[in-house]
Amino acid sequence: MTCRMLPISNTATPTIIAVMLAAACSFLMLTTSAADAQRRGGGASGPPPVTLAEVEIIPIRDRVAAVGSGRARRQVTVATRHAGVVEKVLFEGGKTVEANQPLVQLHAETEKIAVETAEAQRAQAADAVDRLKQLNEGVVTRVARAEADTALKVADAALRRAREELDRMTIRAPFEGIVGLTNLQIGDYIGAGTPIATLDDRTAILVEFTVPESVAPMMKAGMPVRASLVTRAGEVYEGAIDAVGTRIDPDSRTLAVRAAIPNPTLVLIPGSTFSISVHITGQNAPKVPGLAVQWDRRGAFVWRLASNNAVERVDIAIISRTGDQVMVDAKLKAGDKVIFEGGNLLSAGQTVRPQGS
Image (cartoon, rainbow, N blue to C red):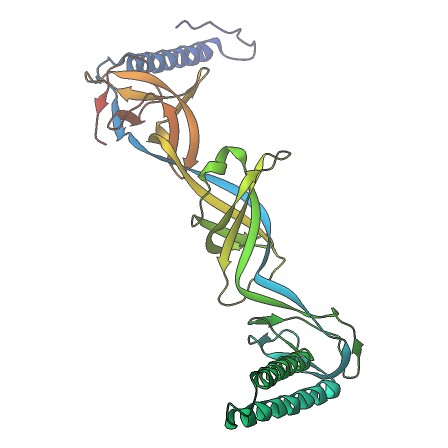
């Protein structure tokens, strides 16, 4: 290294400035000589000390993120099967109802009369059969017995039909769940098929989302997922894949997947938007500490320790990073030692002094 004398101002004392410049040049030359000696691995201090880390080969864990809309595990819009006038509203919106619990009672006086009539006709037909059974076989012909049996069967069918018509006048919950709001009032006339209220089984929330074609073969029922509400990102809910689609969408090149998120406290509401995360285990790859990764104009690399305590450069491509650990694509094998600390000023072939792992 050479030092060049700078022009001296007329206002400065030449002797003082010359002394200062000489001191600065001496310091720079000593510093440069020390750095060069460290790079060469020589000098009075010997090979530079380094710490080592052992390479591990582990499966790559990738993460697939998606957004989907949630719906109840079972949901339905309860409707009437028979036209009529509302006689009773037997539920309160937003409350939990049991399976088969009555929700709305329609006026059913006509249907009740039909049931009573059918019951009387059935009883009459049954009496006729009983009387014929008590008579001797020679007195009653087989034709008469057959006609009596047929009449009883017809009466049974008519009674079942009348009871079915009466039962249709009561709208019931098909399963246990939370019933929605309603505007029905006593005295309202509703036609067949008129919606009464929504009913949701919220014990689990189903979230449908899509994944890229590249990871579609890895999607399996039962794989764990993590879900969080887009509006409340800090709340995380654990679930699992419930079902996987069977076809890749030709336009988007994605596969439909459905996840089930348990909801025992019923805090999750159907229709909410969820952020879904699925962790995928793929092929094996080397794992090294993040501090071991060096960079230069050629890209990322690590220093690997050879048997003679010399270092050799191994180029890497970073696959993923988790905390202070990095998954890489490189020609490294399990048990290789890489320089963890002290690799900033090394050069290929330089001898180092390991201080531990």
